[in-house]
Amino acid sequence: MTGASRDLQNKIKELSKNNYRAITIIEKCKSCGTCIIYCPLKIRTFNIDGKAITINTKNSCGGCSVCFHRCPQHAIKLVLVPKKNYPD
Ligand code: SF4
Ligand code: SF4
Image (tube, rainbow, N blue to C red; front, side, top):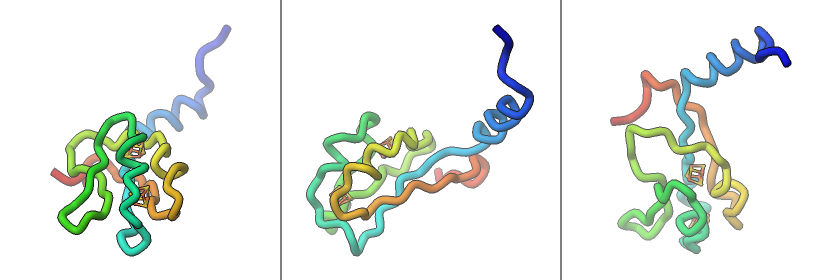
């Protein structure tokens, strides 16, 4: 058994420089709450307008894509955010 290839090691190194963020396309959100129920990190919540958003945290959204796949309105997109640009 050999270790990860040089390419794979470089890829992992590159990915570790980033955090994921689940972003809601607000106008598409129908406030069904599905993403809030299924997010394994419990970092989705309703804002004051009743739209589901990702809680602003220094920690990365896990990027698991559960919310992305579960949203019946296709109102969520996942973006890569370089750690140095991650919101406080
Ligand atoms: S991608 Fe996963 S961890 Fe991130 S907000 Fe969506 S369900 Fe939660
Ligand atoms: S699953 Fe989609 S439509 Fe439902 S609350 Fe979340 S973002 Fe809004």
